[in-house]
Amino acid sequence: MSAANTILLGNDLEEVKGYCKNILGVEQKNLKDIMSQENVFNQKIENINTEIKDLKEERMNLLKKADYWYSKYPTNFWGDYDEDKADEYRENGEEAQADMNRCSDKIILKANDRDSLQKELDKLKIKREAIENKIKTIDEMVDEMIKEVIKEELKKREIVIPNFVPVTKYFNAPDEVEE
Image (cartoon, rainbow, N blue to C red; front, side, top):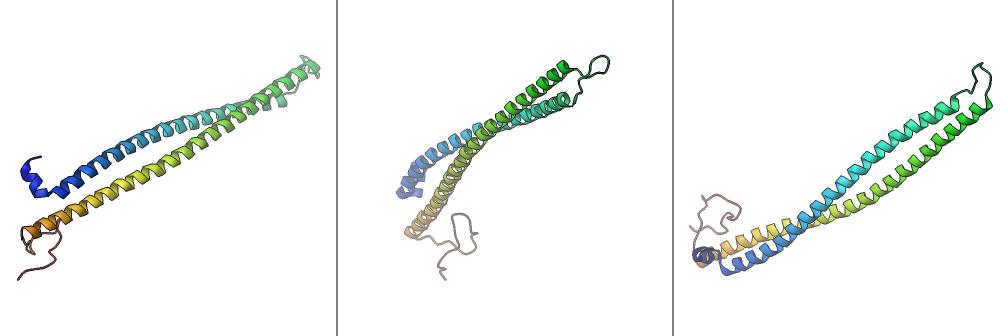
């Protein structure tokens, strides 16, 4: 930065600028890290939701399979009741039901994993919002300091801004109008 700009901005403003730049640098890095972590958690949650969906489809297929075996009537070639086939059908139905129960247990575990990840994601969102608010507050504070420094410099140099100068971010309408 050139010497002319330093004089124009004032030493106080330069100190504040350096201080705020350091704080903002740290907070923006923290914000970037948190957003990266949020993306990782969102991806994990999305993957778990896909796994749960697949497991639910598998469970439905196993239910149909169990229903098929339980509803099948065991007859031999001549149409007579067959005890061996009845045992085989019952065992197949029980096996499908056991697989279905294991699938349900997996769904519950996956849902619990997803819920715990969601809680961690919610904590990260709160941290992100706090950092965003901190950055916004620092930005507002810097804007106010810049306004004050400009106002002080104008007073020191006895510069009066006429009414026709438009109001901007750093220049407010003059407090006192000289006639």
